[in-house]
Figure 1 (cartoon, rainbow, N blue to C red):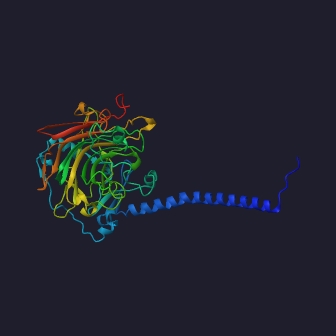
Figure 2: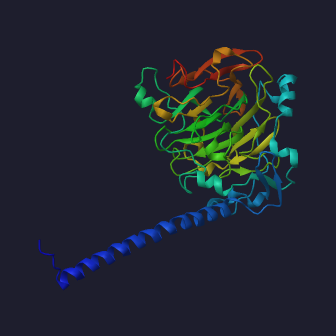
Figure 3: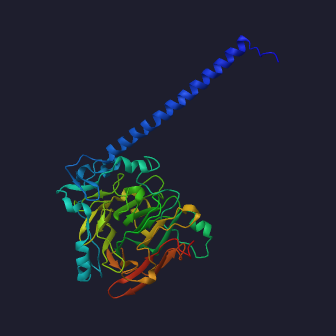
Length: 425
């Protein structure tokens, strides 16, 4: 066969094509090399915005760095609406009710007084400062993007949608979030309170979490949901470990663009120098052993319009300014108490991530997790027992809830479960 001959034109076209190919590959390589650099710059910029210059830093035994930041320099004041805000150092009103902290049995008071945050072992923050858990580079890098760091995933409403038991299971489970809750609706609510025991549930996958909290809700469960949330959680993705931590959350648009955990965006204004949002709680309850619980109260100061939070016997932590919300600017239309987990269905099976103690409610005290003395705040700023309490869980064979009432605990419920088990495949 005769050898092939190329004309000068054909050779030129081939060389041009080769040059173009090499050029495109080179551009792509440069872009790929620049991408981590750009990401790193974004992360460092975000860290600079979050981590304010501290007056003092305390190293916690669990590896956390707690920065004592001057109260006027906290992240809340990055919000343009708070530029000239005068900090409200105390609420105008404090709810009163049947189960005030000083009326709870002495045994509970003793337990609560021994419950601390781990960083307290190595010091406390001075007056006029607030403790802020320092955000590290690896914390932000665990998130899918800088923008999404510190936020709940929007795929879910992240608050339970109350549905009849006959609802389509595919619709119920589409969010990947599962709940076992008690709730009230149909009135105007100006706050809620509960005492809950604290556990360290096992988490199967790093991108899953387990939490127990109070939800203060306004609006629908569509894109306009307003929510204030507070409780304890275990979230390896957010914190980088399996410690049980105090947390708060807020959103005014169903977790889309507004709000965040703790102080990871501007919004919540902290006034307390003893308690750090997102810091570890210690000790925690043990199966058939000592039980440790925390009290959380969230209520509306109807004079100023702000929503306040109190932790324990007297730690008034701070407030969410009313302008952050639309529906909650007036009152809440629903209150929920209970547990939530993320079920990412690893290997196509239900997750074995535990809710609460990881035990079902029927096991009772010392074994199951509970909420006791659950109350709501009425328009007259009184704490009172809720009426017509409903319960909700997507799959009761995985996580369940059982309510009750007595003279010591008022309205209470046990809740939780192990996740995957023979009845919850």
